Image (cartoon, rainbow, N blue to C red; front, top):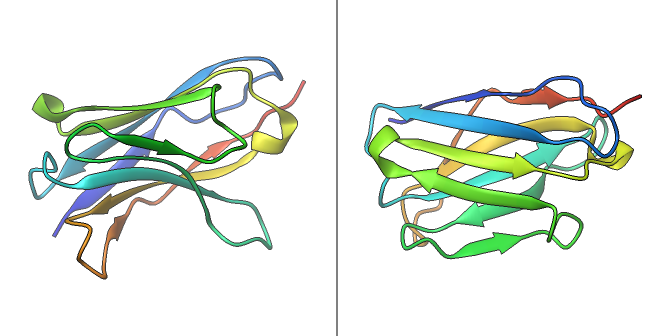
Amino acid sequence: QVQLVESGGGLVQPGGSLRLSCAASGSIISIYTMGWYRQAPGKQRELVATITAGGSTNYAGSVKGRFTISRENAKNTVYLQMTSLHHEDTTVYYCNAKPSPFTTYSYWGQGTQVPVSS
């Protein structure tokens, strides 16, 4: 069982930057594929970025070039550096941990709110 706790959310102005953190406990996540997702009210949860155990990354088109996902296995932590934030990035961001590409289950954090507003 993996517990994920997100932090770093909060109000930010358009054009600003924010770094989200996801701290994992209960298991060593170094072999997991980690990801960030987001979900606005009334909408489906959507992928923001993922990073494999080997460090390969994948981004949604809407955030490519603005967001960077990274991991620090020694701290069992994954980060999402967000820059040039838009109003449209306002939503709740969730951390995800998937044990392997072949598993059908994954773990979720409780989410952290990111309001982008002037």
